[in-house]
Length: 263
Image 1 (tube, rainbow, N blue to C red):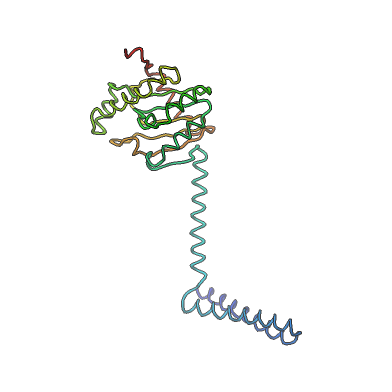
Image 2: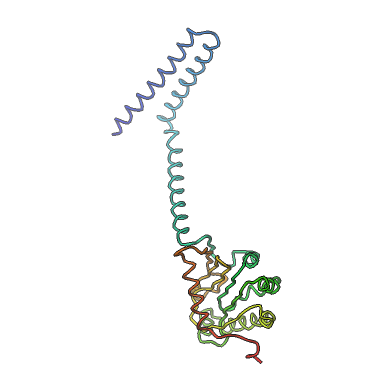
């Protein structure tokens, strides 16, 4: 096989050299202008053939590294296309290694772009009401016709206590929930939002903005901010509808929260 390959290469060199010689010789029988052109072409062909021959036999083929790089690039592109094809089929349009990796302004942008629905499910979602624009923006979106539902953990619930133990920070989640409720009270009092409290084993936090959704899985002993974050888009038979059903299921079994019950 190697011998046959070498024979073919040698044949190619001979043919190329002959073409160069023919071009140079032909130029001698033509006019001055054509003579120069053919001589230049023939000389270039000869020089290229000689240089390639020397490089190939004493240094190694100069083409092989390029071919190898192109093959790797082609494989990488094919894998990327396949990955994009798979993610597009389930509606996954973005992913981050940690929720804290994205700027808070992205959350505010998602809220601003919402037209009909904002649904939030988590334990405390403490980071959102902390933003200085949040309450005013939620009020504005409600007045524009957007329904806003927020599902928080029941501060004294069984699963909240279990989650506290996982995070090895007893009481902190309950405190964060109470702080969130206090910050949301003005919105609830004026009817801009609906709040329910759940006591369920929560495997994900969900933030739905119309036909888009941000989802954070709950990992053992890890706060939500340090867990991965997925950005989903609503498509037929995609992941979005699975998480949307999850939200609705928990909403249906959770308790209404009102300020009058707290008095």
